[in-house]
Length: 320
Image (cartoon, rainbow, N blue to C red):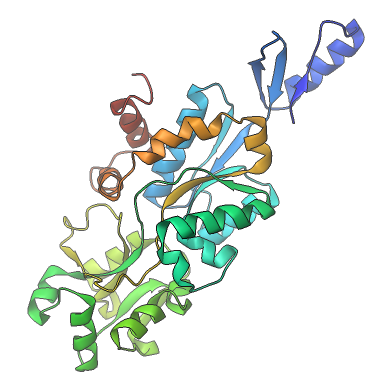
């Protein structure tokens, strides 16, 4: 935590405190009284995918630009790994998604998670009890949908989930790839099956544990192990470039997943300005914006950190 020095301290004590400050890994910040305040270094973690790196890098670069010391821990791990590290205090901040609150604080599968405002307010209020602060979310919605190759869709008359249900119930060949937890979740695949009246057998599903949709999409594009349907996220970059059609969901089945900066309470208390620093950045991030930023990483071959900086500069959040 912050530690202050004053001119009234005797030389020996002052020297000892300065020596300790030099080892703490924080940053010196000027206070109103002209004193030096030692703040903690903020360890910013992210998920493994391109969006995690881009958004995590935005947080890092904005904090750095405002004199807050940071440690880059982007590409830290899968959602469960990052969450555990945040709760344990091994990292201090990350980007998470409001709909994931159903797993963290519950109730799982409750319709409230499909309401963008109720879902956000619920996880914000309940996670504060876990020592975590959810800041201003983006308007983007990174929900899970079903993607198919365009030629497959055209050959079988698929445009919506209603069409897919008809195809499945008619005995059409299906092999779905996606995240195993999504397949098991009452608000995930099971909710789609219930809403549209179809059921996939175990041999029609391939469930992976990492939740990285880039792998699902690659399997779909290549037809790996007969895969012809994949779980995709609304903000995945370059779906159209890969010839993938996202099936329409007229019943609005999945929970809303708004990307949101999440910090340990101690960090927000040490740097109360963080909320104001990040608020305008995240308010600017629409679903279409994230699709384009993710596309630049996935298909233009750009580094996620560079994509983040270019965006922040283009919007005037950072100077050139």
